[in-house]
Length: 456
Image (cartoon, rainbow, N blue to C red; front, top):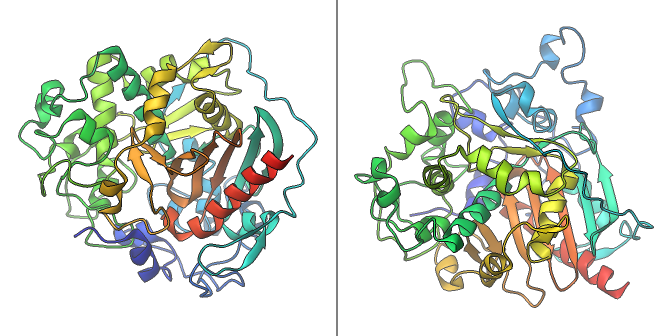
């Protein structure tokens, strides 16, 4: 049975580095307790946002940096906390990547207006009933950067630690929403049949768990593959997946798939497709493979052609690659924060942005409609997202504001509130992977910001 991420992450909350321990990579000493608290009210065993500031701690300073200040990919230190507060905004220095060009056009301006008085804005946490201010919430969830747009104008923007407005940051699973949007465009164009079996396009998967799943089931993550993505459970499938995509080395004497496409072929079936939503990142790698197969281009090239070069982005993005040189569609995008906000603003404006129709309005309308909330609720893995659904790799709130989100582990997010004409983009380096852990803070905070801006 699929285990709740929230419960699993709490079981291992005392570990200095979740994935590092799971994957058999040596980890450093446990961090000292902080003064801040978790969503359960317990004092976590890691330093707070001030004590873990990567600039103050001096990661990778010097030529060469001292051994105790060195962050590497091969030894897993990039994923230890607090080193991760540095590595999430220095990914290209650690792993192979492919560039995603912004193109040659002018930057789409995001006018800056008098900052909104958001720091003192109060909201109530949904777990403890505690009142917090927006300013208090940012370090509580280890925010690296946040930008708030209202009607396309920057009303609030702050950066912390190693991040600034010019530096790309790892987006993790926010990446999924980019490729889900591209796939939805291909469906609308007739290039991809959402009712067809995956094996029609990818015969390589015909004998595996994805073979008799439909494209729609993959897009909405209602496939029933024999895979569990529980970040805090050493029995989960996730460690093997993370090795296959190149995040971590195989332990001595252990072998396995050496790229993401080889890994997808190893997955069997574990139930009946279409019955319920279960979050499984390999679905998005199938989406990326489908995009590549029907377009004849690599996924990152299609991302550049279809979206990134048309947004008027300030900078190039880049995609993390696996050992075989394949883009990790499930979570490899790195980008500047304002450019993430531009993508969200384009989605808010029904696809019309930077003087052109980037995504057909009908495609975005279908995404916003969402999927079946009953299938989403059946997984029981997201107690903080009651009434939500998942469609085309987007999280749909089904609330009175029409909110929809792109979400990534450790706190990456694009929050789109059409009624409030508000977009919030955030990068973070929270010690715990699961977004469910800090949803009780960030979701009420975002809603409070949207309502405040509506009143203005």
